[in-house]
Image (cartoon, rainbow, N blue to C red; front, side):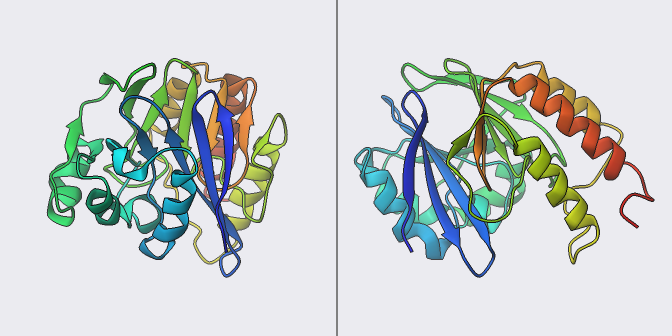
Amino acid sequence: MKSNVTEIAPAIYRISTFQPEFRIQFNQFLIADDEPFLMHTGFRHMFPLTLEGVATVIDPATIRWVGFSHFEGDECGALNDWLQVAPHAQAVCSLVGALVNVNDFAIRPARPLNDNEVFEIGQHRLRFLSTPHVPHGWDAGLFFEESERTLFCSDLFFQPGEAEPLVESGVVERAREAIIAGINGPMPKDMPYTHYTDQTLQRLAELNPQTLATMHGSSFRGDGRAAILDLATIVRETLGNPDAGV
């Protein structure tokens, strides 16, 4: 296996590894700037592949920030490997994530972020949005890069199989197929539907992203607002409907 590296927006790189046993792409994202930011670490066993991919863009030792949505193996399993390679690196995550999981797990304390907190890493500005249980986990949050209007979506828009790095259509349809397959599959409740799920997706749509950096499958360039609103409708009609897919 090897990681494929693609620039999906100016100075924002998708580092993708296909795992045939899962039939899923695992994507990390690197923002090359004064204080380089890595979104997702991948599993521990993927670390050498991700490291190799990052090294084609920057010196991995210069990573300053490591972000992720929620505490899960593919989100932050290799966090300590990155903290060892990059001596000035620090995890950034939700306050709940830092207090409940990361500060016990990581070899260095995380920087907890408040909802809507913004921090600059050079030419890029990152806004953190607290999104409990979207896609899942009470510690969940997402990052929005304001300069290039890139939303790091974590498991939203999940698409199984091998996919093109960046597309301008099709991600909503493939995400819908994956949600329906999941309802009828072995893990039907991976994304809970709560009274604020739709509210959270509407809030993400209001960011008007131009690029959706998806953790599994193709990233999307285009009208991100419309894509998120379409996904919100699908989620409401499937996950919000107890009879859907049964």
